[in-house]
Image 1 (cartoon, one colour):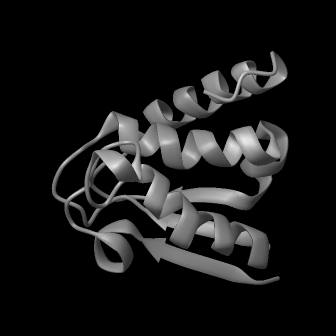
Image 2: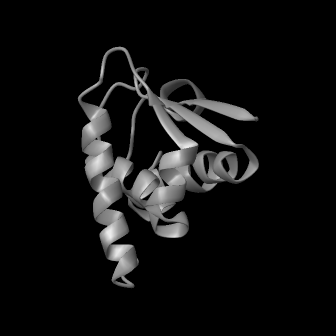
Length: 112
């Protein structure tokens, strides 16, 4: 089993940006395209650390993790994606809500 660990603050940016690349640096779209999605495709399990960035951006998280669900479906993503946090446990259920919302839109044929 191959496992990829991604520490958002260390491997991407300590400052999280907006949803889309055209809106500013360090976007959820860029994180998804350059780190999260390739790791998801190339590994059996992806573990994402949520402790090392300095700010929160709901649109960043929704685009990155909701995008994964929109592209692969919630059941598969839940099997391959895990979160690691010692300081921000409250973020995991929030991200899971965005992932479930993305699944509902995916089922209705809506991308965003």
